[in-house]
Image (cartoon, rainbow, N blue to C red; front, side, top):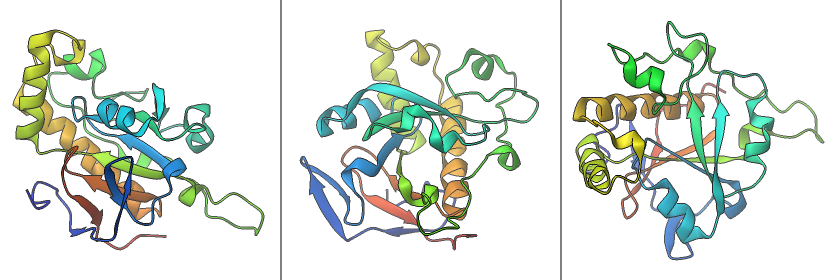
Length: 207
């Protein structure tokens, strides 16, 4: 796959460590980890392998001080992201009914995503470096097959009437969010799949 499905420049992460049988970037702290990504990517499976917090969390990226949310206090943890979208007052997760009912795929409103402030004082919290976001993003084709298989079991309502186009839209949204957070100085990297390679975004940070 070699990261070719990503819509930005990436570099393969070669400095690795193994945590409970899973490869991670060498610079990542176990208690920093927040795992996110589109439905069916394997987030829950990864969290179980790590022995992380079993309950899923939710963070609305359009809210001020989302980085202080209680959902982020216990890590490693699976986190669902709420995205501000054009034409919608409230943030949406990609599996929300409003998202799936929309005739056209919602477009991410990047200017409405809040980012933590820069660290100003020696004793203040560096919120931009407090967490490491792993974006688990398989190719749309692989993700679609995984969700088709899951749909046959009927275990997840989000797989009802799943289509490749819908999956592609969700992958794009998570790619854009990963790039935006990286550009604003947050720790972000991409995992292709549960057994896939790890990639860092090569574009320079905005600071």
